[in-house]
Image 1 (spheres, rainbow, N blue to C red):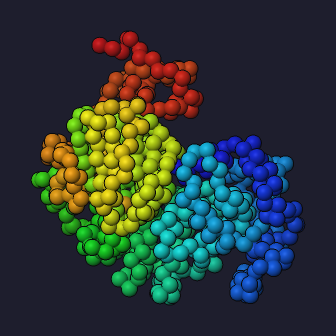
Image 2 (tube, rainbow, N blue to C red):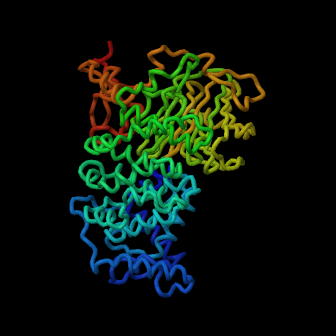
Image 3 (cartoon, helix red, strand yellow):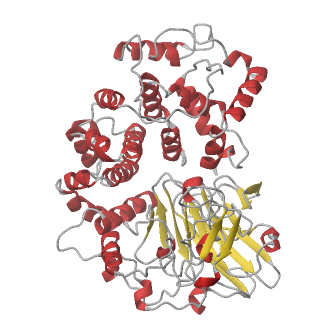
Length: 575
């Protein structure tokens, strides 16, 4: 929902102008005319009138000015880049502030961005304006590396959020960033007692690798940066540095040439050692083990190593996460009960088992304490990952959010009384279809029942969850004893569901793609699911290569992006 708020805001120039008028009325000392000076540190720090700046801040500013003296005029932006959404041609530019303060303000306020109609905070808007020039973009990136604290669970996600909304950096800006960071294997060993800098650096590199791709990503992965990331995987590094170094290498490997370069570095030998942390009681190391195992199965293959799905014991598992119902960006463990998102999108997943009546219960173990929306959803729920819509963001689902302490329904939220969840907490989810209510538990402590979803849906419920960047949790559908079973009588998915041996297998990406190439597709099948007949016409655009089930999941035509007003089943296609 954070991403949605940003997209909605930047898409409307008039709304942006309205925000400026509001800010001018309430925060006049933050606004003023922009001078004609350079775009270096002197522009992004507080002006001379800021008497509240202490001596340390002035010292840092002087030191930064010596380290990097910007040119008098910034480099022009890439002419092929689309125009920046935001400030209109006749709107005043905001006065520059201390960039570190703006980053920390954004981190502090990000938990309050919960609804679609909320406007982005002033600090985020200002940072995006700064990033419109090369020097400003470099200042924002360096600040993200410098000030995001290690202990904040939303720190890496905020790095991704800010950089993802900034303009694409020019080639000159990327080259300058490489020179400023000056990364190497030796640099990975420096300041080991201050891992926040290295964690933030690897998070920035991963975000840029994902955003750029292609030749720009290849150019960014210099020998020094590759050596830095590989050395960060050593056991001498802090586990969170190891985690984000591995994620950065995964994202660089999205470009085939980079994948070959990383694979030739013998990274798989180190990943085999890290894979042993998959079930580590330290939840940070467990994340490293999860990502190492996923990389060995999907990206950096090791000759002679058996794939995890070939050796995992699935005998007692009869319900799991549906790997056929998710995008390629969500990572699901080979046993189908653990999921993780490392993409910039808001990824969602459902269970393989659907319930229509009775009382049902499942539990989730929190591996990361950031933003996740976990609960119940029907088959009518629409998961729009790149638009930020997940569980609880429509009338057919309801979700518990333990990071922001909210209950979600129909894209609206309300606070709950539980404390913020933390790693190792157990969240319980009870669905009572007889009494038409849902009850959420934190370590056995229940909240008042939620009933609003039953005004739109009364059957066909799945366990479901949505993940912000770098979040992970484990599901228990009854294959093992529950930690905090509720006092009333209930059923479990694992006792009533059934999956064939083939349905339980979660194949690595390359093997799944190989199987898809062998599948023959009917000429008149739906272009989305490739299973049902394309028998539905979208109006008013008239495109008709979808089945009705897929058409009902869409709000705009996937071909022309025109809004869908009606969906008409074509009689000639009905047998």
